View 1 (spheres, rainbow, N blue to C red):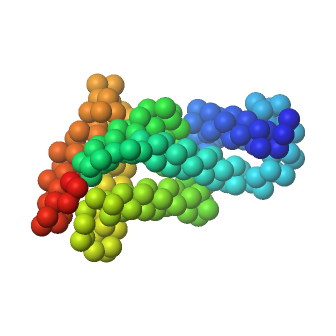
View 2: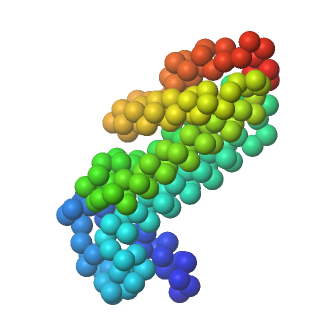
Length: 196
């Protein structure tokens, strides 16, 4: 099996076991057995159990970026871009529901490298938001675009904590809740409302 494919398989099994048992209770032996490789091979690929958790978070970050960017292709307004991006984010949470809480909660237990990777996810989404807002909100200073990006990421992160506990809320519902809270402010971010 090619290395990249084996690595993806290891990450998928690790994510499942971490989600099921929690980071602390999971063992490299159990993950190796689940993948069908030796424990030394896991260490060769990832260096440590924390390194394996970091790889899980990094893969989720790459998938989230691809999902977000695909969702806003061809949009014609800031409102549509924000709404589509939000629906894509909560849809991503749906497809990773079991591991979402784990990755957020267990990163603190795992150590600084895992916490840094979680922060990289936040920064990635902030940059995507700020760039997107800058495409539509003409004349808004970069500082404000960055702040708006941070505000939306913070809102999404907190709402996601609530969202994963609800059976009666769809990705579209969650996106609409955030749109109601932030759109009036973003829609009025410039005096001209260019392309908004």
